[in-house]
Length: 143
Image (cartoon, rainbow, N blue to C red; front, side, top):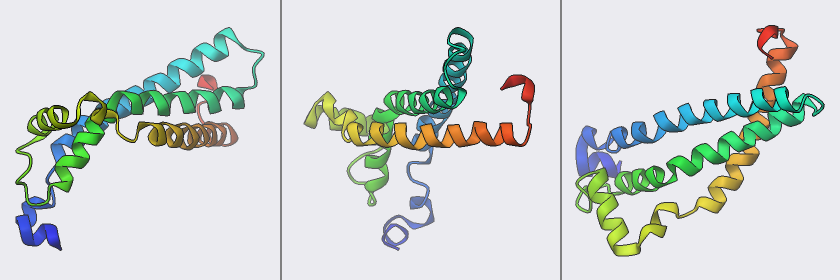
């Protein structure tokens, strides 16, 4: 309700483009990293259990994709938290002011927690996904 009072309906969508700038590269890198690491692990280490490969490839994909987009996520959160819109005029303004006031480290604030969560969540998520595809015999030729 504070957002609606302060900025109206438009305020509900503040940071939408920043969110897109973050999510598009994150999703693209996430799936590319998972597919690449899974494919080459199966190809070059066929003796390794496929569940372990899926687990590790999922964790790697989660951590690396978040590593790439953590700065954008920090900036997105700051832009969206600026409910009244009086601190930042947009993403670039937020980046300049944040780095000037707090240094480059600000762009990776909370990274350790994000990376830990990313490994755990994505390793389990993609392992379960691949195993469900196998269980339902979806695209057996690509698994």
